[in-house]
Image (cartoon, rainbow, N blue to C red; front, side, top):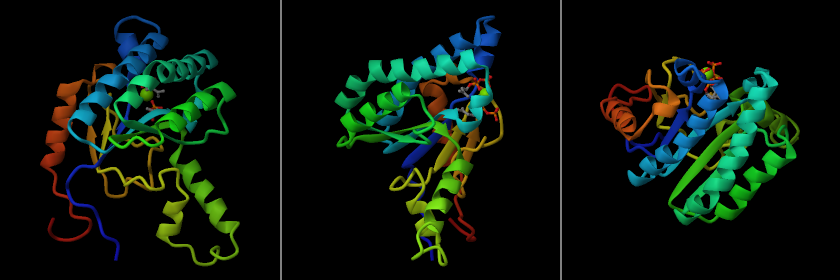
Length: 235
Ligand code: IPE
Ligand code: IPE
Ligand code: MG
């Protein structure tokens, strides 16, 4: 029988949504919203690190976000590279390990290199794992795992949950205890669809660039009030 983790929170995953609306409200271009969103990452990472969280995942660019206008995609790619460049030394100093989940091959070589540099430099860090979901899609992740399993004659006829998990991008990362979505939507948008089977879900109207330490406290408080049952009749 599968064992589930205790209620102690180990992994929080955040769908960082609402950059565009933040900019719209201020009569600014969407790119300004993405810049404000990128600037907010450090504040949120620091807060979660300070409460002792071990895994934080941030959803930054989905496989569906390629459908956006080219100039917006360019802005997001440039922000990924510049944020990585600006923050890497400091994140490394803070003993934070950076891990990418998603399809690296579909990225521009410059973006891919930037992500790989972050992963290489912080590989041995132990304080917190910061997982960046970039060019990430839950369905693409599952399809990738299925293809690997089908290509192995030893396992293709008897796959099990463990084998699937072994081939997900999140291998070795525990399932998220809490998924937070900013900007009010009530959907996963192809985020961690396998891993979120028993995650608690929290949505706030606050737009991502405004999501601050107090907002994190509110989300954690809401989590504390939840009863996780995993299909049983008691916690
Ligand atoms: C989230 O903000 C950032 C990405 C999806 C890359 P949005 O750009 O989706 O902001 P809204 O939803 O338009 O407000
Ligand atoms: C989800 O936000 C993806 C990221 C935050 C990276 P979207 O803005 O792309 O989601 P939808 O389109 O509203 O579902
Ligand atoms: Mg959005």
